[in-house]
Every structure is written in structure tokens, then in C-alpha cells.
Length: 464
Ligand code: NAI
Image (cartoon, rainbow, N blue to C red):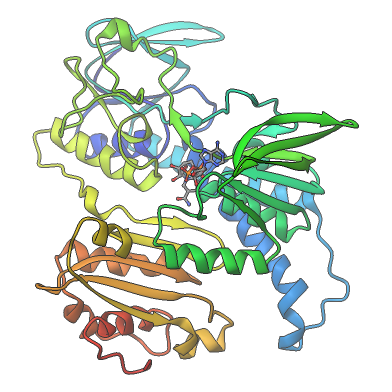
């Protein structure tokens, strides 16, 4: 079968690329090895974890906060099977939604394992047989898989990745999480809210290490109050058995540490998934981190083959992959596709959430930039007080000379939604003053963003 474009991988990068291609009139095939579209994000990542986080936020509310609102929750109990079923329903609905979006645009969805099979050719293998597709352009969007620690391989039962940890059928009494990044903190929060004793073992001296230190410190304090235990600066050394129970071993300052565990979630990052694609034979080169090498137009070292998303350099985030999918296809179609890598928002969907875009204060100072910083605590925001969302703050980092916004960091309820305003202001090269003079509805949590922008010039009205 002959196409203009074959996209390999049906995650947020791949299916979005296919849709954009169809919009631009390219005859497109989308090849996916799994039975559903949506990739890691929709099937076992962003979406199911958000469903679990939402359910367990309610659990937390009934357990800890309901009484203060005059709500009696004496009969309150949780049913893990029902909670998982709700999560699965969310995933199924979105699977169906993506399928409709793709098929209604006349994209051919081909289920099977794809590999490169010579100039313009893609071989797709299924249980039932093989077929060869041909196209002028091929986009590789095969995503990533969890990193495994070499001395403690995943066994699917005790030592697990996020895929299993979002689907436990009962609450583990003791859950040990390795890595205090996005996955560790989100999934750790889910099970802690359901009653697990959660210990997070992190190599670095701070949790959520990509955020500013003041953000991480507050997050650590708040999550500790919620029952998570953090063991920072600890190097994991292995796992042993003691009386039929797993024990994670680690070291800190030469001292041996031991953490008994019913489940161990390894969340130390993800790596590009390129296995079986036949990259070598096709002449597609990898970089030193085994990511597919691309130029600014997503072209690999092989003619007509492009790559986007988690298989190439940059943060492994669904929204980054989507933007690359659109830009890559637009460039193929002779348009001016572009991704602004300076403005990739990051979010950790805990409670409170942590979100950022652009440069943090620490990173800006490390670069030797002169900055003015404005900070506003949610404690001083009316809506936050009315809705129990007073934990956290907004921090705006602006260039000291030009007042141009360089970055925003938020720790607070709904930070994931609020960060979008920061992205928009920054996309249009806004200044802190532009933002400070933008009217915000009252009462909203977002006013804290405006107030933090005002604080850059020491003109915040509602904080001293
Ligand atoms: P991550 O890179 O965000 O965090 C990994 C953490 O593990 C880091 O804090 C690191 O210092 C620590 N670490 C590394 N090796 C270690 C070791 N041997 N012992 C102890 N700690 C160690 O990776 P994570 O959380 O696994 O997520 C994987 C990818 O998926 C990331 O790119 C992340 O951005 C993405 N993701 C994004 C989410 C979001 O945007 N909310 C949610 C889940 C995943």
C-alpha cells in the first residue's frame, strides 16, 4: 500500500502527527503495535494516573477534611476494584475518542509491530502475518519505556514499574518508591492516600529535583505531612529477601539502610524505545544516550525518516511530543513548523500540584542572569482561603534589565491549569508588568499569578 506518510507509534506524538498530516491532505497510515491508540500516556501513564489521583484526592478529603466542612463520613470506605474500574473506564473512553478522531479523518490505522524495511518501506508484523507499506515520508514516534536498575530487574510482582503500580489489586502495606520525580511523587501519593506506608528513596538531596529548591523544600514538607516518608541522598544498592519479604537496600554517607517492602516501584526515568525498528540497517543514527539523532527539522540521518517525542532528545512529555508531531508534519508539507523548547511546561500532579515553565530562579542565577523575583503565597489569596488551597506560592522570575518574563514556578492547587497563562504571556515575550496589568477575575487562585508578577516590582497589593 502506498502512502505519503507512515507514522510508527500511536501515542500522543504519533497520532497527533497523523491527524495533522490528514488535515494537510497527506495520505497517512498510523502503525501501532498495541490494540489501542494513545500510547503510554493514555493507556498506562498520564491519564490513568490522573484518574487515580482524582479518586484518591476524594479519599483524602473524606478522611481528613470533610469534618471541618460539617460533612460526616462515618460510613466511608474504599473499594480498590471499583476505583480501578473507574480508571479503566476513563482510559477506554479516551481510547475510543482517539480512534474516532483518527479514523474519521481517513487515516489507516494498522495494528502490528513495524520495522524499517528499506527505502520508504515499513514492514508490519502481526500474529496473522506480515504486510509491507510504502511511503515517501516515515515518522518514528515509538516513545519510551521505564528504566530498569541493572541489579534489580522488574519482576512484575514485587519490583515493578509505573505500569503495574497504577494497577495493584490491593493496597500494599509498605510501598517503597525509588526516585522522587514526577512518577514517584504521583504514584506514591495515590497509594499513601489509600493507606500504604510509602517511603521514597531519592539519590539527590531534594525531591522534584528539576524545580527550584524553595519549591522542592515546601513540597517535601507538605507531602511528609500527608504521610510520605523521604530518604534523600540515598543510593539504592539492591534488593534482598528476609523471611519471605523483599527488603530494599541503600547507602547514605557510608551508612547502610534497609527498607522492607511489599512492592518496590522503580521510577528513575524512562529511556527511548527503539528495539526491533531496524534503525541500524536503515542508517538511522543514535546519540550517546541512545536517542534518535535529529536535526532542527526532525530529520534523522536517513533520507525520508523523521523522529519525534520520547525517542529523541528533550523532556519526555506528551505535550512536547504533540508539538513536535505537528511541527514535523508541517515541515514535511512545506510549511513553517516550529517548537519553542524554551517554553515546555512541566507539572507534577500531586496535591498541591507543582508546575513550571521557562527558567527557574536557581537555573537563571546559575546562568549568571540578573533577575527580579516576585513571590506570592496562596495564604494571602481569598479564593485559596475559601477552598482550603492555601498551601504553596507562585514565583515569577523576570529579567532585571528588560522585565521580560524568564520563568514561572508554582506550587499550589490547580497549578497545572494556571501555568498555561504563564506559557501564553511568555510565548508573546510578555513582561512582568504586562502580566501585572492584565485583569484577572476575582476571586480566583490565578490572581496569585498576577500578584506575583506585581511583586517583581514590589507592587503586590495583597502581600507585604
Ligand atoms: P524523573 O526523571 O522525573 O525522576 C527520576 C528521579 O529518580 C529523579 O529524581 C532522580 O534523581 C531519581 N533517581 C535516578 N536514579 C536513582 C537511583 N538509582 N536511586 C534513587 N533515585 C534515583 O523520572 P520518572 O519520575 O521515572 O518519570 C519518567 C518520565 O516520565 C520523565 O521524563 C517524566 O517527566 C515523565 N513523566 C511525567 C509526568 C508528568 O508530567 N506529570 C508524570 C509521569 C512521568
